[in-house]
Structure formats: structure tokens, C-alpha cells
Length: 343
Image (cartoon, rainbow, N blue to C red):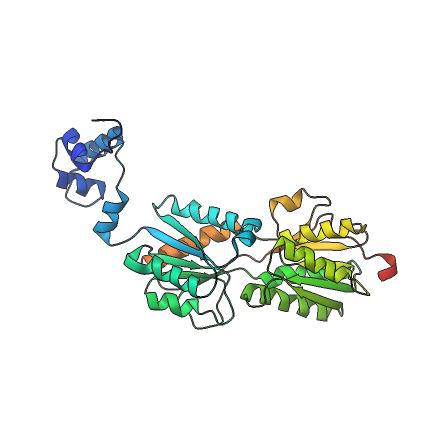
């Protein structure tokens, strides 16, 4: 048999001295095969290097053995956001051991995005979808329900949804950051937020305002697109104010690190003149100078949990809401007591 030819069930049957039907029963762990015969078939398959054909498996059970992830953000923002690589790694931790493929697409929110979802659902190219970056009144919930495929949402939608959800309480992390800064004596604290149309960005901002109100802080906020460049522009805007903040709470680490760069360029010292907190606890934030105080989340664990929830939904399981452990605050060198003149 040529080395480049993939072994087939017929090859396994010849090697084991049985029929193809019996090989199929043994390889699919179906009853009716004597233990000794099953062992002989499995040994022959292993020696030949036989692996199941995904296309044949898909036809036999009516499944694509693929899940879709459509990211509705600019490719530039995705490239700079460390959340998605870690999240996707978590998905693959689960999918790789179940023979499930991940179909990844990037699409502009709106008509192009809807067409992408419809194309993935056509001819059952995917068995399920993962919905990220939930939006206010998210129309994708109704769209995916109309398409008749399983789905899991990251976060709880603000519209009726039949799908399972996996949620982390982002508000807890933001509250911890604000309380930390208030305990350090900061009174002028700003928030560099994500897009208000995204539910998790809006919830982080609401948590910031609530925690700041409890601490009676003087606050300002600037909305961004979650990009590092957006964080840099927002930081410049805040530092140009007549009374600039002595601390800034950023909604992700990329913006926080960009903000520290802007502060350094202006001759400010972090944290002596300006304290900075991030969100996500990315690896890079641990090695910048000063090391970034940030809200720690487990993006990879979130991905693995989401994959398991989606596989359960595809298998016909009931929808469920899964709460992940609350984020924690990792205090490093980018925060310090407020400058004496601002205390």
C-alpha cells in the first residue's frame, strides 16, 4: 500500500480477516462483536495507522463536527486584543479531543455579519455557534434561533434567549479596582471604557460609576473601541483636562499599557503621578515597567467551559446559565497612593 494512501476500513478488514461491516461495528463500539475479534480489529487499525474520515463520519451521523465563531470587530482590534487568542486556545483544548473543528470568521457587524452566519449555517457547515461581544438588543440571538442551530453566548443577553450562556461578573473586577484606588487616596479617577453598545463594556462602566459613587469620587469617562490606539487617545484627552485624574481604570490591558506610554511621553511617572489599572491580566502586562495592576480573568478557562457547554447543547442538552468564578484584582507596581497635592 503506497505510503501516501490513507488506510481504509477495507484495509483494516483484510488485515484482521473480517468483513468491513464487522470492522465498522468494532470501530464505532457497537454491540455484536466478540471481545477477541474486537481486539484484533483495533490492533489492525492501530498498526495500519487508520483514523476516521471526518467527511464519512459527518455523513453517517448528519453532523458537520464543526463549530462557528464569528468575531464582529475590526481585524486590527482583534490583532491587538490578547483575549481572543487565549479564549480560542481554551476552545481548542476541548474541541481537539472530540474531533470538533473550529470555523473562525471575522465580519463587520451588520449585513456582512448576518450573511456570514447564514453561510455557516447553510448545508449544516457548522453544528453550533459561539456568540461573543453581546450587544444591546442583540439581533444575532433571533438570527441564530431562526437558523435552527445550537449556540452559546458569552454573557447573558438583554433579550430573550433560548441558548446556554457562560458568564463572568466583570463588574466585580471593576469594583475591586475602584475600591483599591479609593483606599490609596485617589479622588479624581477616570474610566477608559469600551463601546457602550457592547453589553460587557456597558456593565463594566456601570460598575465603575456605582463603585465611584459609593466612594464619593470625582469621575470622568471616555468611550473607546477597546483598541490600544483608542486607549492612547482617551488618555491624552483625560490628561489635557484642567484637573486631570490621578488614576485611570482601563477596560482592558492593551489600553492601559498604551495609556502608560502616553503618560511617560508627557513626563508623568507611573505610579507616582498617575496610577493605572487594566483588565484581563495578560502576560505582557506582567513585564512592562511598571508591572500592571489589573483585573485577572481566565480567558482560556472561559473558552474551555464555553466549548463544553456548546457540545452539550449540540448533543441535545437543556440550556443552562454557567457562572465562572469572579475576577480578582492583581496588584502590581502601576498603582500607588495619590500624589500629596491631589489627596
